[in-house]
Length: 532
Image 1 (tube, one colour):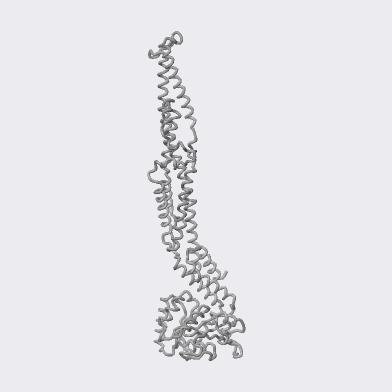
Image 2: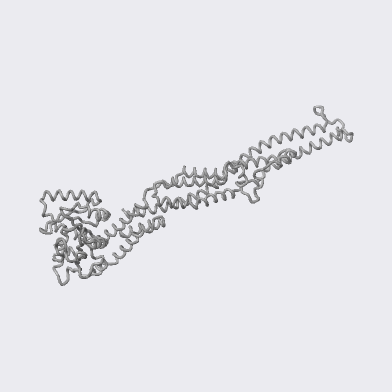
């Protein structure tokens, strides 16, 4: 893949990644550059288009005549065809079609090997040399022609003169904006014969410093004189080298792509961003956990499990009383989520919870996108926090509602203790009945002769006392075990709910944000490869 193909592919990748983030009007120049590059490659790649551009009186036309070896361009401040470029092509084929594409009229196209034939110039074989109108002409049409033809140049030869080489017109209008095209440029300080050797050296050094400040460091600066021929061999050699390498047109198109990429980078930004770090992500999950009411749900689960343990394991009379007490989760399994069941005990209203979650989501997104340009940051925040925020809150609610809190599970020890409590209860009831019957003389308190009387108590009273004592011991022990089990159930419920929210945050928030950040990275990498 050529350097041009690599940069075009990279720039296209960046534009595709951006989508509608960047204004289509700003992307339009890139599309125009792609079209221009494709059309240039479709035309003669055996020819290198070299344009001589400069201000009035710089001696462009004289240089054009000396380079072509023909008196084609009229020398002076005004020439008869001031608004038209003049072209001279070396080589037998292809230039006419190329010049037609550029927009040079047929009457202004000269072939160096036609009826004006001259010995073959191998160094210039494939050269298409254009002499442009003066860029600072008072005729606006001339400037328009210069601007138009400059788009098609494979190599710029900027012709400056000793009096106006620092003139702001050419530097502001052409050189500074085309700093990305320095590899496709040659600077000529013409009319060197007007300066002494010392003054010429100083002028060249000054010009090099100016060019360096404008991004043209390393661009060849050649002092010439169309009158004496000084510097012309060096200029011909430089042009010939560019032609021989056959890379001038590619270099120009690469520079076009680089220029567009830099313009897009200035609009869309290419600064690195921190992304969603672990502490910020964990803080976001903690906020979602609080907003989803997980602590309240866990407390309600603990309370509910403790009450259910009391009902299941207390002495039957006490257990019946416990059934009358309110259970915050008693309606679970009947279409209500755990969060809905405890909504009345929540410290803040659902509306405030949503606002708090939305704010946390926005703050985390802004922290992850710090350094992004305004268009990109607005797009990412809208994707994650805009309409997406409502989906996030709804997903969190659904994830909480869908968690199985294990409330249908009934520990086996509840059943065992409950059975023992019923035995003690029946023992007490039996002892009471026996005692009453014995007082009424219906039965003998001593069922057999010599029945034991521990502590001097009759068997009915002993049965009542042991039943009550055993029931009290079972109740105290079961309540302690029930409280331990309830705390474990609450902690387990909190862990399950937190894990569910964590998974939802990863799936909805982190994945969405990571997708947006990946788009931004493709944008950055594409522009970096297009501008390198």
